[in-house]
Amino acid sequence: MSYVYESYDVAVVGAGHAGCEAALACARLGLNTVMFTVSMDNIALMPCNPNIGGTSKGHLVKEIDALGGEMGKNIDKTYIQSKMLNRSKGPAVHSLRAQADKQDYSHAMRQVVENTENLTIKQAEVTKILTEGDQVTGVEIYSGGVYPCKAVVLCTGVYLNARCIYGEVSHYTGPNGLPSANYLTQSLVDLGIEMYRFKTGTPARIDKRSIDFSKMEEQFGDEEVVPFSFTNKPEDIKKDQVSCWLTYTNPKTHEIIRENIHRSPLFSGSIKGTGPRYCPSIEDKVVKFADKDRHQVFIEPEGNYTNEMYISGMSSSLPEDVQYAMYRSVPGLENAKITRNAYAIEYDCINPMQLKPTLEFKKISGLFSGGQFNGSSGYEEAAAQGLIAGINAAMKLLDKEPVILDRSEAYIGVLIDDLVTKETHEPYRMMTSRAEYRLILRQDNADLRLTKIGHRVGLIGEERYEKLLQKEQMIKEETERLEKTPLGGSKEVQEILESLGTTTLKTGITLAELIRRPELNYDMIAPLDKERVELPADVIEQVDINIKYEGYIKRQMHQVEQFKKLEGKKIPDTIDYDDIPSLRIEARQKLKQIKPISVGQASRISGVSPADISVILVYLEQQRRK
Image (spheres, rainbow, N blue to C red):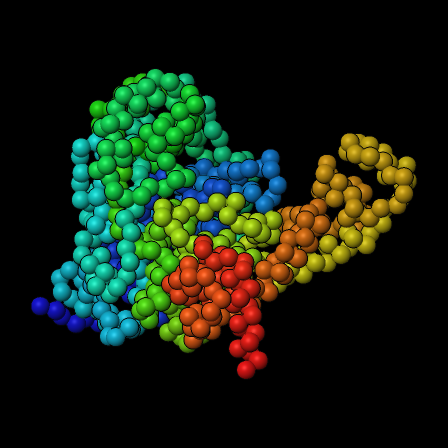
């Protein structure tokens, strides 16, 4: 028997990284929001790796923060080690990564969501999405309770019909032994939604007291910490950091795996879900990279108040006895005591091509979706989608323009465009190589790119917005000053240049031209800059990068202009591709399925050729002239 309870503007299903961002966005924008979770004690749970950020993922976290999301602030509060990756390379691929105290991270996020106005949290399993026609009207929970609402954001993560497997052992549970959600999938299928079955995995956790760290290489955090949130300064979040450790597998490890590969559910066929290509299990690595005699293994603490250590690089679904033999073959782990076995997890998710770029389902008005449920992997990808899905659910109910970030504006734009436009047959992972315009989509300038959008939406307050405008002005004025400040070849100047290990002057030069020299930067030329004034570190960083990479940035901006032209050519909802006779059959089928909103998006659809795009452009021009 069903009971109707209080109604809400928005119901968010799931309280993981996507659910928290979606619910916070809706509530902060003034909508009465309820967030459902299978466990109040596991809000923003980190069931796998104990870190936030990393290559390309750090970009996503900075962008989430720039738009007004919470993940960056939360990891700044709860990190135990911070490191900037790829420092030896250019700024386009610098990526911030922080080890988290898992329990602290979850508790801190729970404190935020529980104390956010307009946001209610309810521990219950949502079993059904209620609709009238093609419009969402509410959700039903396992008890039969009905919660009417105007929009629903699905952020179910890896919980739908979840199954955890290692060896011959199979548990129908979610990660960390939490209950799986076993009814919602059928409701979605009944609504005509196409489902996929994906798989991911996690390594064992090992008791710190059983590890011999003397056989491993210690990995330290950075002395100077860079915050994830643009609202924090390094000195605000500086703290004592813990170490991680590096060791390696070896031929003995690989031999153990090969001898038992037939017992792996990945290879025996008992796992049906498709796994992530870019985050393979250790057995996958040994089979696919048979020429390698070792693989990196990072030993990472799960938090300050636990002895559990995460064995990064050795996720597995091999049987328990094989896991013991395998882990104990690794230097430093000879006496390892496993506290939690490694396992694979299968779960239901959707074909994300059913979504609009706003992350709303094409077929069902008011139904939005974010996170691993959309076929992606990773906490950061999930949070980014949750934020955009939440924002757009709010924009729809508030009758405002949706937020659609394109590929030239944000990594988030690349992520969502790839999901909704390109066929995804495995868990999607963000990588810097996926971003065509990564020189201008750096993590250091995420606020300059996106905070104005966050302010327009209503998630960025006036004070933060004004600070951004001041920062922009300082960057502009300082860059112009350096471009116009000449430097002669006096004896003093030549001596300073010699001391800096750079070529002396034969003719006059500007300070900006000096900065463009590979061996110099803004701070190094300070002795030559008599008019220099004290500026914030983040302003100096932008001035340095903008001057040093000016030529490359201009070239990429020109490419963006060309890209924008196609993105700007909108395709009307009313278009009938069957009316365009010159389109190839495959292109017509794909276009009807995906319903691209622009010629630019159409051009990225697999199976749509440049010739098809030319035909569409001609057709649109003909229609415009009618």
